Image 1: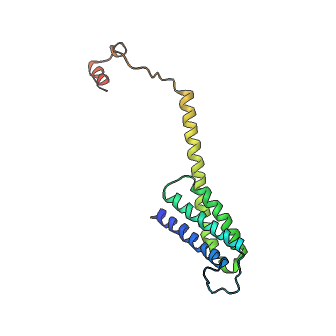
Image 2 (image 1 turned 90 degrees about the vertical axis):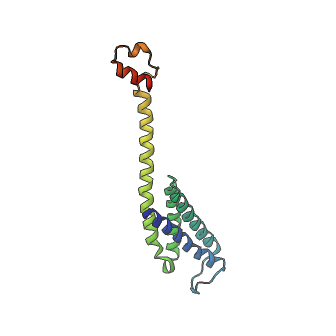
Length: 153
């Protein structure tokens, strides 16, 4: 449930960024006549929207690197919000939520990869067990039920 809500939050936040793009390219008018956005900034609003959309898809699909895309989108988004503070200040709340989740996800990503790397190293360095197949001579001293079980397995 929480995963779905977070995915929806990122998707909606990305869609709201489209307002800046539409406003800059005069695709739609949202009633703020005194809010002027240069086309270059409008393109950046579009990039932020794509970043949040991509992050949402990656997060929903369980891709580990979603947090890197999300943090980039948050950085760009917050820069754009600061430039249009009067009209976009409430986007900061969504950015804080996404950034907090992305930082936790980033830490989890690095911890998982560090753990997997240490396990691989440990298996290579400390695996003193033989990988040879057991022979009849190896199990001859064991009780009959154990011998039968080993032959079966």
